[in-house]
Amino acid sequence: MSKSASTSVAGAERTSDGAAAGALREHSTQELTGFVQNLLQNMQERFQEISDSIITRIDEMGTRIDDLENSISELMQQAGVEEGDKQTTKANVASRNRS
Image (cartoon, rainbow, N blue to C red; front, side, top):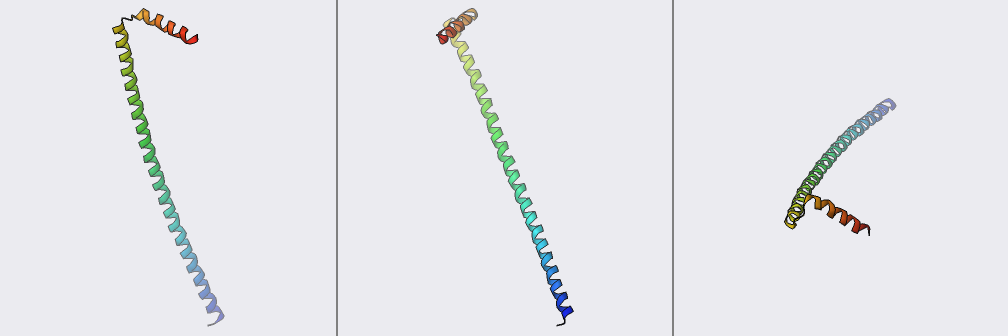
């Protein structure tokens, strides 16, 4: 093989290797992009699930607080505590807590 033929074969191999490396990088980049997109999608779905769960719990807590307020109000009515008496009772409780 002549020197020029040898050089052109070596150049073709380098070009072939460069193209293969470029294709590999392109494939790796696409895989990485797909992986990151999938990861972000999963994270977004999980975040939405957690957010929905928190909102549901807050709503349930609000309902329970409303029920508790109604129960307290009913108990106060049963005990005969009037609106004016409520203020006096609150003041008495506050003064006892300070003592």
